[in-house]
Image 1 (cartoon, rainbow, N blue to C red):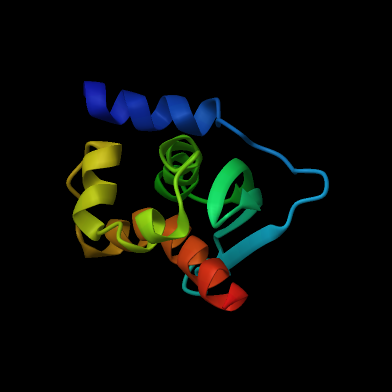
Image 2 (image 1 turned 90 degrees about the vertical axis):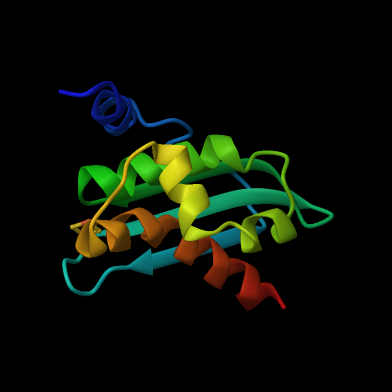
Length: 121
Ligand code: FES
């Protein structure tokens, strides 16, 4: 297994910030209807900034490991930071180049967060 895939697999096996947040004031969830995989984020947000964030979900290694990495990546970042994240940013974060199908898996968590942010407005 390549080093990069190992990083992804490690996040899948030991997801960071997995669980729920008591008294959360931000929630975002999305299901990929083509496969049934899903992610759910809960967060404590202050001044549009993610002060604490957790996720739950079920699905493929890429979707779940990316959700785990994203919780670390966006902590103490604001909504604009998240909204400006691109497909390339996600690929850089997970350190893998993906084909179109797998790319959908990797973008599911970010898409969920963007929907959550847009729903607040
Ligand atoms: Fe469903 Fe990856 S196969 S999100």
